[in-house]
Image (cartoon, rainbow, N blue to C red):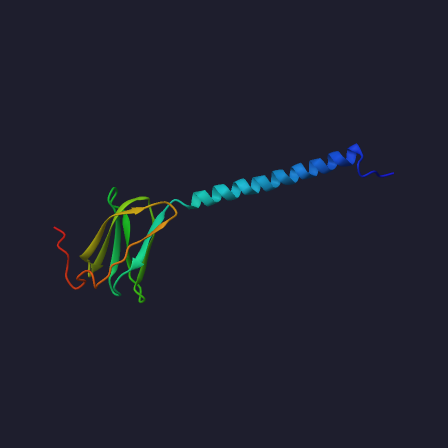
Length: 128
């Protein structure tokens, strides 16, 4: 006769549950380490005049990137290493305006807008 509460069936159930918990735990740990490994950079995004470009440069290393403002007046500089940045509005490779000491942190974006009603976009900035 097969008894549901026999010692042998109880030990099998416990073994199955422990195996299932172990497998689920292994997948959970693998998922956590993968997610944290991907979050190693930050970004700068915002609004700027169409036709201009944005340069984001690290104050510490000088590394960074230059991106173009799209036709909707938006830009996004992705995959920036953490640090303090200078974000520069450029027209024809000439500096027009700057935002200094912009903090870029891991896994986050920081919004930096350039508004032509507040700055003189048609004048080249004195950067000397």
